Image (cartoon, rainbow, N blue to C red):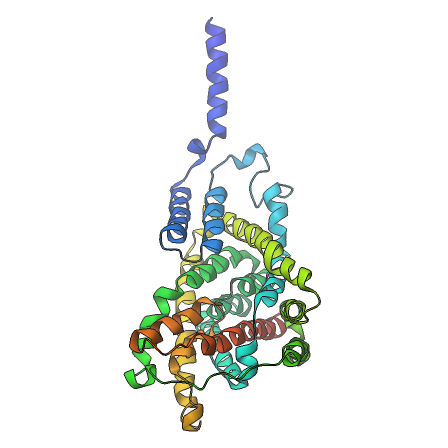
Length: 387
């Protein structure tokens, strides 16, 4: 009986070494709380639930402690594990282009086509990317890391993942979580900046209704857009090519089934896999570092600079525009590519000061321009920094 008791005790002791309770560290508990906070924001506050629930639950999965020496092959960084195989879509950079395919298939570029000068607002908002890049260099990051961090200012999670997978794979988890976090916090971050930088007279400014865009223009836009942007920045081809291809599927009128697949089941599937694996990549041992804290601070700064740049650019641009063609500065925030959330914020803030002034259609112009602008900026950084 004594030998049997010893046998049971030894086996229980061995079993204990495999449990999460034995292998847990304070870091794991901190990251689990972060994951639960993301899920809370998604459900209680409805902040980007399609993104924050997969990422939040992925953080929980990635921070279940286990004995690495046991060779269980369950962790996302263990070669051959299921999570590691799924994560290769992130590290190899093929999830983001598929996301862009779906974005293109669901995006209406009519507001931008009808008023091409709105493209300049999307370009101006990208200053947040290059501003954060320069600050990151001053903080001690190398040029490739700084470029990957700066792209957070574009408020485009797939672009941030794509660029960081090429330039700074070791920082990808922190960059991706930071990018998606600030995308979700658009309703919190942008309105105070918009109110601070505009006057009451500017906030009630009315814009001329956008003109009607023909079917031919809609079909030609993705073709011309692809040729212009990718001849200028060939390194942006994976993202821009898929974006414009998806848009052509939508606007051609003869590939409706393909467009519906791209903007429905395909993008939903990839979003689930992307969010879950990005969340799972935030293992405490890899994620809880001083660099991660710096990235979150730089990400916030980048996002603030981008929002302010868009609003200030409109104010300056209005100085040279005829009075009847002037732009309401409240749509300047939409130059970041958080589609359509930042455009909705333009509408919401505008309605606070004039309940009859609808800015959403106007704001969608710089908003979709921001998607193109962030992909172009990523292509520029990739082209220069990977040489």
